[in-house]
Length: 274
Ligand SMILES: [Zn+2]
Ligand SMILES: [Zn+2]
Image (cartoon, rainbow, N blue to C red; front, side, top):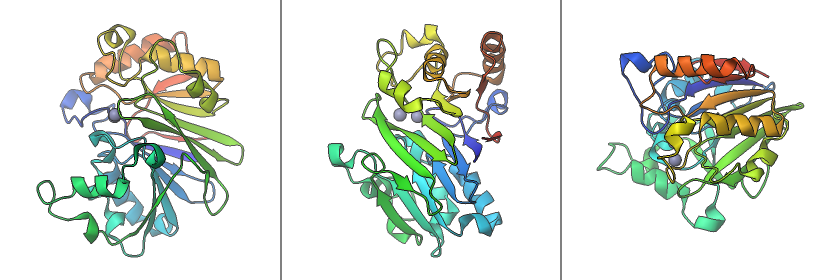
């Protein structure tokens, strides 16, 4: 499978000149399966460009598109009204509805809320795609060719979900907006076990994390510890703090790579084949 990052920034998009190399758009990752089917992880502002790219290659949007949301904080859904395939009557979208059982919130009403007239000129009802919702945390989603997508809840204010995607023996785990609390959450280690690529929240340095307790995020050191304990092959550090410039992040990456050869910054437009 191939993974392309369309949004790697956390919390809010940034357009400042010194931040563009790492990327300014919020969470959005495209997964292209060997079968040609696709899945999208989160609908942050990066999904706008992703939608344009998909429409340029109609082959890619022929089947269903699975959209797995980690949760519905702004930076993970805000791009959706600008996702052009959602306006295509021939397109089928399957949107994950994790936590419905526990939180009893209807995802369609959350999406509709961000598109109500006070915020956006087009209402959710005007989207012409065939949109279905699916509870990925209670069942395994199988694409038509058999790739498997599962979800598991992790710690974040309001709850958030990790995704594990498996196709032909390759494993991708996406785990963002996670606060481990004291120590590392053993469930996250278990869920990430033997992944070929782990994409993990790394919003803060360990020093910064001390004053961000309860904000719902992880440090670089925590992401690396999860990767080590789970035996993952590669770790992409993700959900970069909007206050961290390119210079700051590249310097940090250089320092960490001296001791951890298999870690790297997730950069907007970067692609990885597993
Ligand atoms: Zn976020
Ligand atoms: Zn969040």
